[in-house]
Image (cartoon, rainbow, N blue to C red; front, side, top):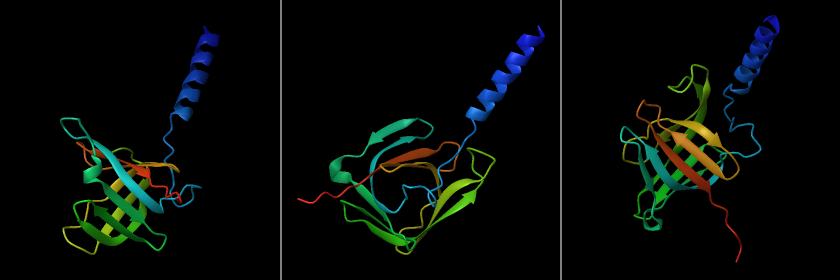
Length: 146
């Protein structure tokens, strides 16, 4: 019986260590947030909607190393401002994780801060910091010479 208890305790320790959330730090990652990102789809909310963004409604956001960002759509809505990545508590975790904040210099109102759920070399997932949150899934735009 003691062997079973020890085995169970070891298994429990392994599972708890392997499940620990380790968010990506966009400031130290090999794949930085800087660059151009295309919004692919949005999902979430109370109704758990899924909306793929049609090409004629595309939304692109550019992050620059100096802290500037520019967001624009096919419909001609262009927004510029400053962004900052801070460590904050969120609805997802009591520990401090990366949150991107925006200080928009153009109207309409400044967007709410977004939690960085995932950052890799080719994808960026941001989320609202609300119980009925939406996820915004972006893909990196790679410009290829003709």
